[in-house]
Image (spheres, rainbow, N blue to C red):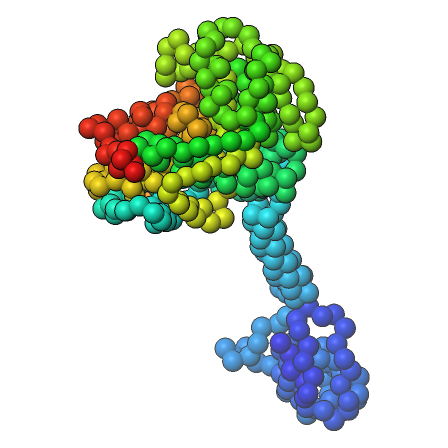
Length: 425
């Protein structure tokens, strides 16, 4: 830096400001100090004038400055600024990518592990004695949300996350309509669970309705092949009217595996159609025919000798049916079905007590393991692929047992049976 009274000039600047005559000049070069008297002096380059002294070769004098020795400051500054801007651009781009990964949706929906909730804390009974248990019968849920890029990437390494299309996530084609269907399925499943539980401990319950409502359709089942969907109502089988599920179940029991039946079906809009279905073999019962659906009685009216209220909160869908059934049985009978354990239960229940398949079973298994459950009961009608996934998740943490109906579940939890507390009422 060459200093001129009140004027600063950086090295490398070729044109320096003129210095007024009489100004004090201090610079590096041939002439060390002096006073500009001519008015033609330039900082760092001045004609010799009176009062100036010639620089000596002592160590205190500055070395002569040449253009070859000087790196222009403007270039260095530009380089520094360029590095700063490049760094900022990288940071902004990185933040943008993170935000995009977290917020930008994909065409898919993600099934992820949901909640694990004790049933008995949500069951109230009036008109009968109730009992408490040390352990818990828990129902399981799945969380459904729009998948982001981050979710998509995570699903590649986490088997607890399943990506599905919108059609799979919302079979009805509309999220609002789907929630309404699921809410109805939950309401129906709570009634069915209460009825089945009461009947299993000796009570008599009367029921009426206007058909068999399909709550869910299992994968790779006869019903799926015949394009039956959730929300359909079966009103007749081979011309025989069906008003409650028991009537359909009894009629199916009279047919053989591999035979074809004609179902009269009412869809959600009230349209009637005929559907031919070839009956399959129930996975857990050789020789027993089945459709592969979870059913409840449509617009069911029930006369129960005991009032049972089940609070499901914001949870919708029919998959907690088996858990609610076992929870009500446990509340009504002495002893402890859970055996002091945390028992995870999933599966639908129809009025005949049969356990139907559910969706998101691998996510429910992961939720159960994370919650510390040591036993999980799941539908015997679950596909082989899903069973392998469930067993892989449960390995070393939790015992898993398939059940085809409520009796199978009670055989696991209460091998000696449950007291028939309503038999003499």
